Length: 437
Ligand SMILES: *Cc1c(COP(=O)(O)O)cnc(C)c1O
Figure 1 (cartoon, rainbow, N blue to C red):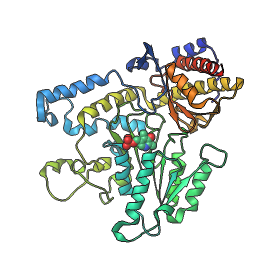
Figure 2 (cartoon, rainbow, N blue to C red):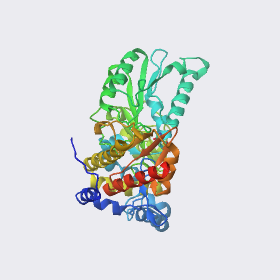
Figure 3 (spheres, rainbow, N blue to C red):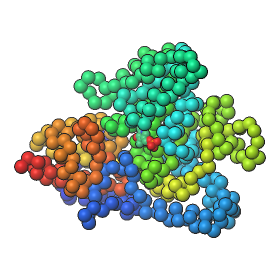
Figure 4 (cartoon, rainbow, N blue to C red):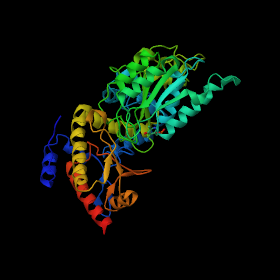
């Protein structure tokens, strides 16, 4: 798609006027610093609060006040708590490109990574390797390391070498992102010993979106499972997990999904496993066959679908916040969201390139092709580094700094505007001018 942008305020304003999603900015609380709304670029870290969230939470507080424990079942109550995990399914299925029975909200992301590895990482002395992206998010790295040690030395014998088992794919010398062909070739190269491919959907540092479909295909050809950590892809990319035949995935909901700090995660498990009670898993009462849950009998019988991976009953107050934001996603739909996102990030990229023409300040390490990225751009600062970042923050730009020299900017299509991109470019120019003095 070729898009012609203009470096003028009038153009930015026109883009906002023509934006079919423009009314959604009013649906969010935009933080104010020194009496001015900030330019919020950190929706990839913590999404903003939807204004409707408060009423969703207040409703559950009211029901708790009115019904006490009866809130779980009382039919006068609109959304009984007993079924609360079901209320997010429809929206999540739309966001993930999954069937409703393939998704469920539960726990937090790192916990879910562990739980899903219990089911999908079943190493043997022959097939034990895991392929991951180099420089994965630290929490994921600790998951891999601890899972590998757990399996390698389980029962006192050494089943395999845990260091050899972790295959990390890194960019080629002089490159910032991974080539799809390198990922596929690595999978093929290790196929005999490969048990699992487990990568980010979007790499949190570079913003690169991987080809989930082709990676999954290659993993299956190698007789391995393919799973993805979608922390940075959920609510950002137009995903089609079921059609891409992905085995499992998990994500957090406080980034692009705006559910509030530390809020619930979600999982996806392809239906071919969800309806196989023999798939090993760690069990809890909330994953037990629903009509027998309160019989409190021995013998775990999992619910069908992703629900069978639940352990505990849902955190209702937090779950209400999750539902409030999902309602917005259902109204908008991922297709419309992505269409705007491509334009918005494209505009930011264009403006940065315009500044680079005068003096090369940034190397954009995020892929240029919109198909290979979400809304985030990661800028490697060739000059001024952290002092430039500090200047931007002082002038009302809320962005994020990653060592050694990267500024991450995530214009979020639900609440960021084209005019903000233009304003950001002006602030950037002013900050650069100030640094040169
Ligand atoms: C944000 C993020 C996490 C955070 O994990 P929590 O369990 O939610 O604290 C983990 N992995 C990735 C890739 C992330 O981006």
